[in-house]
Image (tube, rainbow, N blue to C red; front, side):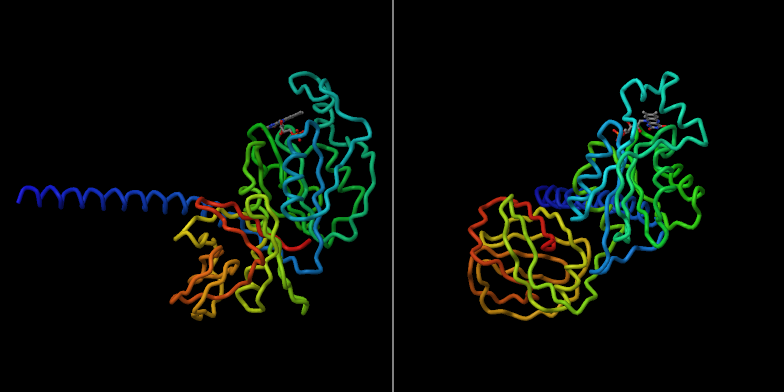
Length: 326
Ligand SMILES: Cc1cc2nc3c(=O)[nH]c(=O)nc-3n(C[C@H](O)[C@H](O)[C@H](O)COP(=O)(O)O)c2cc1C
């Protein structure tokens, strides 16, 4: 009897712990959601004809690193704003009467830009800069004076010691109220690739609204490049709109790797009877599965595509980056 009691107490404690863990997880998730909901700007829809670029200024390289990552993940062009007179370290010593401080205190200051570039072809500009005294460095105003950003969407991003991006975005909007400028994001140098991919995904949606079909995408599995030959269905079309994706896929049953995607996809499940190594499937509406062994199955899936000559993916978690063939 006592043994039974002990057992049931143990079960209750275990359940209690599981519930606490789930609640903690949910609360953390909600916090993230709230942050997203605060970004009241409309989503930018980038269709297949829309072109984006990353344009940035960086005096000491921090913003440059983030800019390069955004451009890499986005597969976009990248343009550095190079000052005619480079900033030396003494120009940036903000505890002194340095050049940067003098520029920031002078409303007429417009430091010259050495290089010129053509921005006509771009519809969306990711604009990066360091925060100087709570706002944009004056050279960003030179950029806005020299180039026509009307009919473009500007998505700002910055790096800073700690100051957030909102003050600088307000100043950009006040400088030219005709421009479409999103809320943007502050990054720190240690921010992960996942944070950058989330920032891109939160701000743009790549839709392929041309009649041209995307019939393959690139998958980098643990640094090895493969091609996923795609099915022609609604699931695939929606998945393409969610790219790029960086996923850690878990091992299951010695024959598949799986991950739950953030978004649900449309489905048209069927029982394929047999799974072939290299099949890429959707289980339910958001579980992406890559099979690396062939076997008979009684489960139903929506087929996404197939990777030819996929090797055995081993027993552990794999990292998978999926992007369009840019
Ligand atoms: C003149 C000057 C003013 C700065 N003002 C701020 C500030 O107000 N708030 C802050 O958090 N960081 C401030 N910083 C720190 C930079 O924003 C930070 O180091 C940034 O990541 C540098 O980017 P970069 O390497 O791309 O130039 C300032 C730096 C300089 C040189």
